[in-house]
Image 1 (cartoon, rainbow, N blue to C red):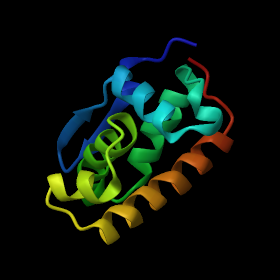
Image 2 (cartoon, one colour; image 1 turned 180 degrees about the vertical axis):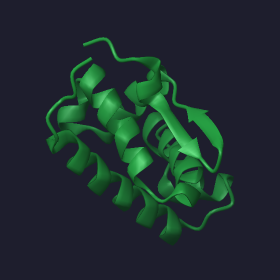
Image 3 (cartoon, rainbow, N blue to C red; image 1 turned 135 degrees about the vertical axis):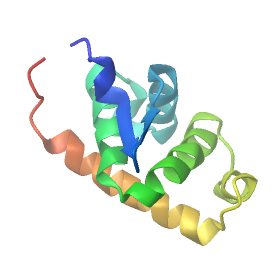
Image 4 (cartoon, rainbow, N blue to C red; image 1 turned 90 degrees about the vertical axis):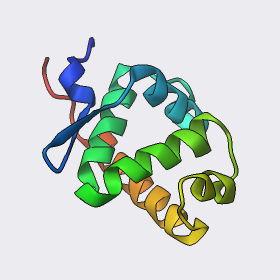
Length: 111
């Protein structure tokens, strides 16, 4: 499955955040488990999970996810680097994990 680049676009209040496939893969690997063998479907599901969050949380969540999962920084450090407290950071990562779990249960959409 070769994902359309639009599959990695996330709307944010009239703007678009384009998630990089390399960051999606690094986050997937950092999340571990079955995601460690990241494939196209996993990257599409991760982007869908970001889109499932409230608009105001999408950009900060993604920056936190990249720092924490892809760059292997402790949650406290990753959150602090972007001006977020660890409690809010944990809540965002938990919401992201739930959204990803829901997205990965959906049948794939035809290309």
